[in-house]
Length: 111
Length: 114
Image 1 (cartoon, chains in turn yellow, red):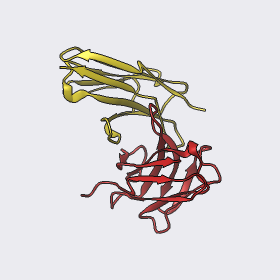
Image 2 (cartoon, helix red, strand yellow):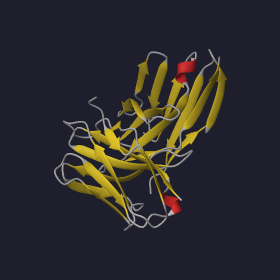
Image 3 (cartoon, one colour):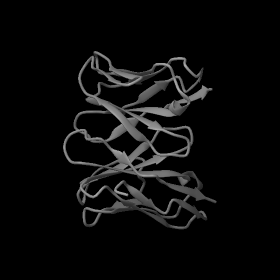
Image 4 (tube, helix red, strand yellow):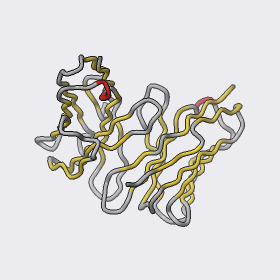
């Protein structure tokens, strides 16, 4: 079945440093979604990417969808303490509404 | 609050007991999803409903698990004869109809089976 892998599993940065998490799917995706989960919280939707090679930006966050629609990345510029949490990618395949989540990248930011 | 709500927020039960969780989706959302999340893992899809119809179920959803959405509004997830391996956070999400709509998650029900 479809598998979604994320690396790294953990990332610790100093405030102001950049951060990137990578997501790879074993199958071609129809779309990929990114979620953020704060400690003790629930996943909160960040963005959805649908088109091959798509790049979307939200302030300091940049999301990319690979040309082959099998990988994606999230890049945060100049991290802040408010960025702490676990970032999940979730992929969907055509013909199904289910999302397959990666294991997430847990980001900690040292002030 | 017009977000997704789940009850109870926490449940402690003994092995072998039955438990039932409830999810109230965002009112205009006709899709409802159940996920399970264990520590250090991403949410794992269990099942989803379009209105009252259960359209897809994961192989994770053993015969001890049953979900319903009788009137196309709230949903219940029941686990019979609970096992320690069922301990997890059970998340509910809802979305509008249509292809690949954003899923809005509730706060979850944390289950501990002793």
